[in-house]
Image (cartoon, rainbow, N blue to C red; front, side):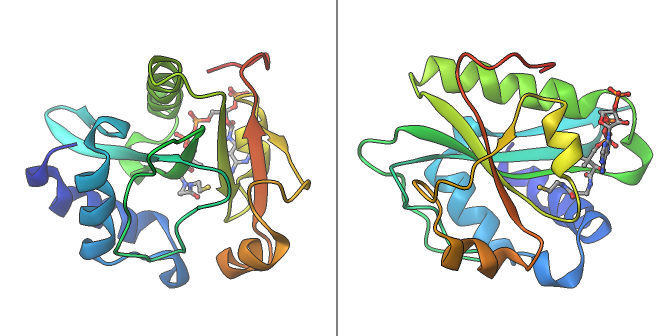
Length: 166
Ligand SMILES: CC(C)(COP(=O)(O)OP(=O)(O)OC[C@H]1O[C@@H](n2cnc3c(N)ncnc32)[C@H](O)[C@@H]1OP(=O)(O)O)[C@@H](O)C(=O)NCCC(=O)NCCS
C-alpha cells in the first residue's frame, strides 16, 4: 500500500463496511505510516480493488477501533489482521486468499508466533476457512474491549502450526 492508494482504499472501505466500522483517513494513515510493510492492496486491471491492513502487536495492546494514534510496539509478538476488504467487483476472485497468504509470509518473516483478528459482519465462517479459530481466553483481547467492536465481534487466532487454506 502506498500513499496514493489511500483514496481507493477509503472507497473500498465505504463499499464493504457499515457506518459503525468506517475509519477516518487519519486512522488509515497512522497505521500505514507505523507499519507500511504489513499493509497491502491488490489490483485487478490496474485498479486497486482490495486491501489488507495488518499490525504487529505486543500482548493485549490492540488499537481501539478508529484510533488515529497507532504506534508499533517495541516487542511485538503477534500479527493483528486489522482490516481485510475485497471490493464488490473483486469478490470471489481469490484475492482474499492471496492477501491472507501475504500476511502469513510477513508474520513468519517478522518472527511472530500467531495471527489474530476480530471477526465482524458475520465473517467468522470465512476466517475459519483460513485456519483461524475462536479464542475466548481473553489473553490478547478482553471481553470489554471486544464488545467495542460490536455485539457480534469474535476474536480469532491462527496459531503458527495450524492447518490453513491460506
Ligand atoms: C469477507 C470477504 C473478505 C470475503 O471475500 P471474498 O472475495 O468474497 O471471499 P472468497 O470468495 O475468496 O471466499 C473464500 C471462501 O470463503 C467463503 N466465504 C466468503 N465469504 C464468506 C462469509 N461471509 N461467510 C462464510 N464463508 C464465506 C467462500 O464461499 C469461499 O469458500 P470456498 O473456498 O469453500 O469456495 C469479503 O466479503 C469482504 O470484503 N467483506 C466486507 C469486509 C469484511 O467484512 N471483512 C472482514 C471483516 S473481519
